[in-house]
Length: 305
Image (tube, helix red, strand yellow):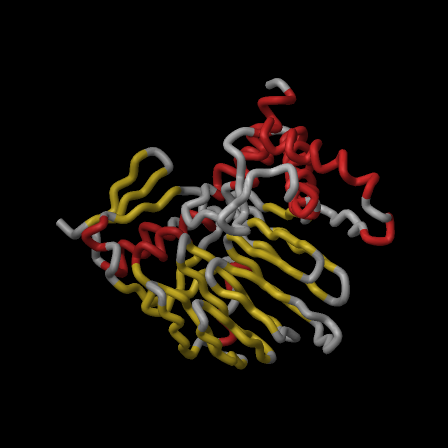
């Protein structure tokens, strides 16, 4: 692959991450396919940051715009040319007025069936579930997938954790954060925190969970010992739709589990083992009394026959 094509792919992945239907699985696989892909992505992120920081230098050179919304050019050359134009103005700006270059965010990833603990500065540790991504930009963390957070109390810190549509703040606690498409869930094991979504704010204490689903923030009680139980080889579900159960089983097991749309909203409660020798999809099918059809490593749950 040419360097130009690789960089173009990196820019495409970077520019698409604010979209609700972004392909995080595909992005993870692309990053892991070649170390040069990760280097290209870091370069793309830095280029984007440079563009943002020098946007004000382009006012006289650019055509009038109707608003200040972020504009992504349809090709990499357009961005590169614009940043190059901005660079021509840099010598004219007094050095004491220039902003220091921001470091690109750090990314931590896990594959299917893999977990990983990331130790960050100032007493923050995050254990990533399989097929998850943690992005760290200073005191702003973004989780895609699922993570178990242990955060030491620090009044001077302004930590913000984003999980899909939910933001978590006022943190000095232990909690889990998970995203499933447009759905997100926060569960508190120790301490307390504040969750926010779509203008809704709620204080959560130990033994409480908040799930954002269909534009609603639903708060419920949760068993504290079930939070992050995937670290010990099991998953606990409480009135969860089968679509969500299937997504979780796919993430934690070696097989891909899917659900027929006709039963996707059926609710499941129970504890499911997820070890290498376990067959969690078949266990759920037996409990729910639904059909389970296997095709190679894939399992399809459907209406009972």
